[in-house]
Length: 75
Image 1 (tube, rainbow, N blue to C red):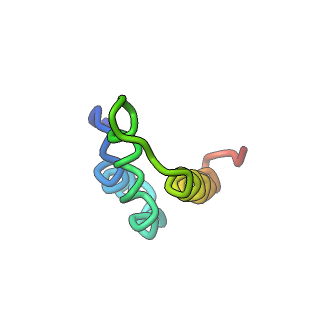
Image 2 (cartoon, rainbow, N blue to C red):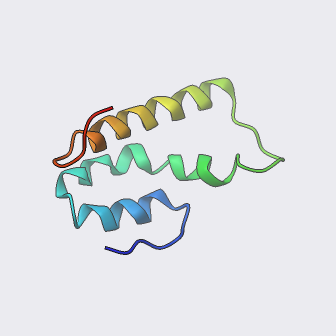
Image 3 (cartoon, rainbow, N blue to C red):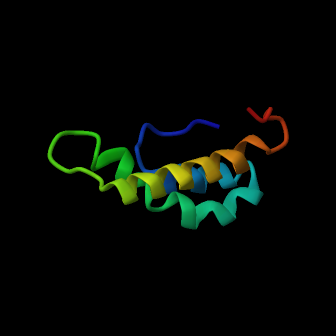
């Protein structure tokens, strides 16, 4: 399945759910991560330490779910 070039993680998740329906419950964790993919990438805005820790925690939780899907080896 082709995926568009985008930083919008919600958009990518919606497409991926078509391949792996179990990922649909990841919407809440993925939604705020798009901001980190774009807003804090360039000079100007900075995340607080608490925001950064929260983002890392959400990323790790998402990665754990995604990597335990059929066909993907946990790492």
